[in-house]
Length: 536
Image (cartoon, rainbow, N blue to C red; front, top):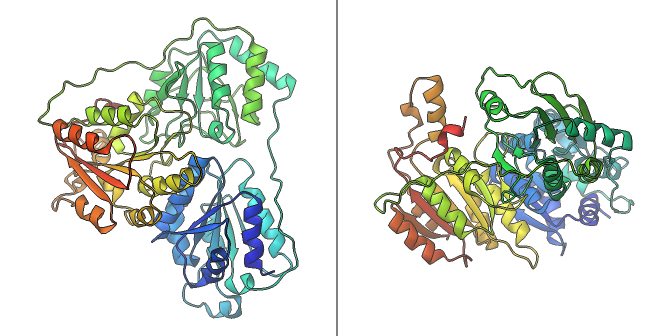
């Protein structure tokens, strides 16, 4: 069979059902072979800026490998920003990069570039199909590496002339390297570390999601009577927000983190490589610390870990809980309650808007790239573990396209799920062409655009760094017409600029959408979300 056929059948043997991509001439053999498959679908995006987040969102929402196809050097360059995001968030991605035809590669043809070096900057490993002798082995190696923790993007460079070449290898499933459970002596060490603390706390990251360990994490926290904080910028909610142990997201400020954790005398970090901070602040975490996760390069935010082990989290956390026995006092609600602003039908307060959306779409999967309003979402949400997604890197332009990938992944089977994407107006413009793919596949997404006509998050940072908001971060005039964007891609459009109008819009929506819908909430920039001050 041709190498292109071997590649696709190997992906199928490993459970892959979708490839997201923005193909060009060098990807023609792959797309042609894909169209002849019944199980494997090629999902076309209109740019690589959209294609990568689609694969990333698909992978996170389905807890499986994402596959994205990028078009040689310019296409890889376009996708590098969101490959960086996938790497920071620890998403398993196989990146199929179109190589140039090897027969005239020595001439530096159009679209030529140092793709191996480029991919190496944002991928944990890079493999290339060089000859018929190594092609099958390198396809398997790339796939195995992508499925081996710690997760991140893995590139496979695919020259089109080689994809058309025949080989005799047989496609099969690969056996990725897996992390083992803790040995009994290690279990005892973690149990002793936790049992000796009077007020322990747990800080969790994405690794919990990929090991499907959220229930085990909640049971450990209950046994300890300890809160579970999501580490700053954690890309997937690691424990149910409805849990009495859930304490919310830690802010991306070391000073605020230290203040939030000051009452605790021991910190158990589960997953992640360290705290992701935005603005520099001087602070110390003097507590004793331990770490358990996927990536052995993890560094303690202050000092050293007393214990640090790379291990499978589901089995290891369960073993630690069993070793602890009944240690805890009463389990304490960890989140402080906040009062909603008073209702004023003449205006639309962003906090009240978020609260109403969460109430109406409480069973949806949420993707959030709403800047300052993000903290409001996290304050009020009661979502299940794994069903609240953010980009994780601190960049923007990921959320809208990622919601399309998530919707395609979660609507492929019988148990279809509503996808809600809450995106700031500035962020929504980075990859708005993803709306076409959503329309083409009938995804029925609810896209909520919070339109304050500002890069409000940057102005919040400017207030701390530059002494006040900057005019450069105002995105008007002209005021962007999102109704035109919805019409361009055949989406239903609704808008609200007051609470009365929002009530009417929510009544029209119901709780189950029949078509892709863009709901624009036109906000007064002077009204800040209640929790905006927690953002940095």
